[in-house]
Length: 111
Length: 114
Image 1 (cartoon, rainbow over the protein chains, first blue to last red):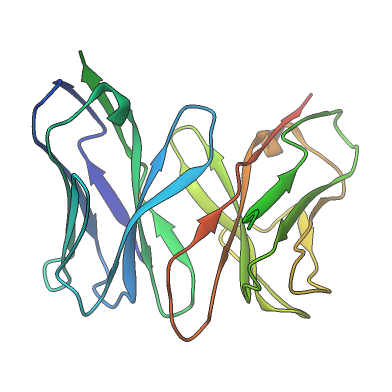
Image 2 (image 1 turned 90 degrees about the vertical axis):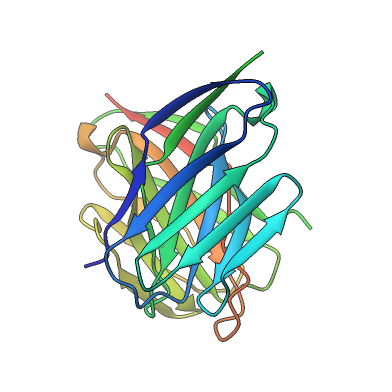
């Protein structure tokens, strides 16, 4: 059974800092890994999708990497802003179409 | 495109009542699924469907029924609500089956069972 872990559970940084969120998964036989953002009381917004054959994906100030062999993915946020404050979730997709989610990292960026 | 639309956004039920959470997508997605999100538990898969007429159970299916009569709609039914079903429910879709462009989620239904 796939298990996804996100570390840290919470992170507080000053504005402008670069930061890394970590995601690990136990079963390396994944099709892809997707990073989401969730604002309080809201739904999930997709940030980046990395296919199993890819090493990284970039969108603006966000960069996600994937190392299947070690069962790890990281989300790098450059020059953080208060508007980046949210919960970040990673989810691994297996061959059965199902997504397995981590419990998320609550990010607070202080002005 | 509207994406994935969930209704209602909020609902309060009494124990034993039944209701249907609606989910509709206009992207012609084949795969649709329901998740519940609880504090400390993360998102857990309830039921999913890989196409019209095909449904299957996820991780926590007990107490919930689904059907998929059309590609667009995937309703979730609570036949006899229990306080343990108090949660936030998310519907998600993805397509196509053979080329995965990632999942799209609805904005959620916040359900309270008293």
